[in-house]
Image 1 (cartoon, rainbow, N blue to C red):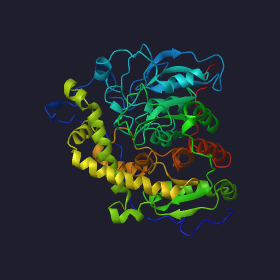
Image 2: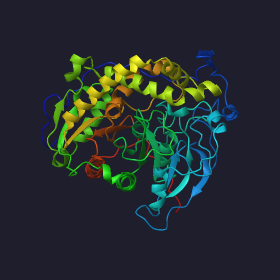
Image 3: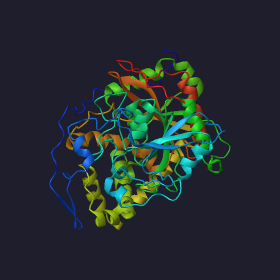
Image 4: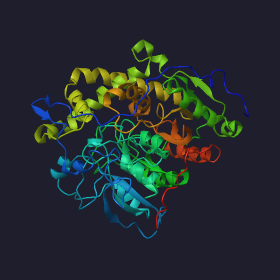
Length: 480
């Protein structure tokens, strides 16, 4: 290895993690009352009858990975533009004029009229020359990080067959990973772009909150949710950013990100093989990485807030869940109460939790959220970049019972809530694998540093390895 890492950076603790096992589809939960509403998770939309015994959902000849809810939706892009010749797919929460937005649930689809306008984020890609090639599956109301939908099935993860694709932007990730489109437009609230990117071996950016228009987009929790996107290569990811990001909100002076911070406590949440795989990838040509990022400095990010009860990431996760959940119920509770949708396991439980959050609880959580944001802004300054694992490890197996994922989900949201609570940009770089399954490195930058982060991602992907599957696969080439 060229160069020298700070002591401890490559020390891998022998921490034990709960193992995930192969499991069958969990049985339907009993009906649960929620403010007079009854959720019957055993009641499925008609399409699910065909997919109930299929762990990777429905598929067809033109959609073998079940990525799309409407693959026939096509809108030609402008004749000229920086994205000319590229194609994209959009998560089914972006409005496209003349079409219904389904938000991952058949009752939502049935109770909302066709959109009267196209979301600005979608229109920006069209105006730049990219062609829309379909709407994609997502988790119900975007309230999950798994990518499993009880009504429409689970999109097949091309990078890890038999394992979940991650959500809630599951279909957009799968469409890109399979080579169906060049760009996948999704959203990120609590990790919904970053998690599928790590699980499917993709590059992705969750931008600074507010830098991409959320108009005509059905958000899960508006003060957290931002449009975000996937690509298979860093140049395409950056090109999409050039048309999606609002230049008026770019960081003043556009400083380069040259102060490399390694979140030691965040790496402590990763499975040891994932931690080692990422460190090994970063160390493979270390002198070139240092030339781009500077010498690394290890930091414990959460510990300085111990006096405020925020000394561990699990404390941050608790703040995130309260703030997000309160917004979720405020935004969608009336619709849930009126229409009594049949939510699947996990989704149902989260809505029950969200309905019970009080104003007093969210007021206290918002104070802590402000403390976390202030602390991170001070840590990053204008030139810092924080390295951490995007997820604790590779994608879990499809149909793992929710109870078995509880400990995993706690570690996962503890990682994703860092950027989410502070509204910061985070890129995923697919540089490593564990047993042939992709795992990603996350880089978090200061607010408004999205362009610098995208430039850095492109430079780093020129010197870092790309993850390699144990059994290499080739995405289908898009016909243009």
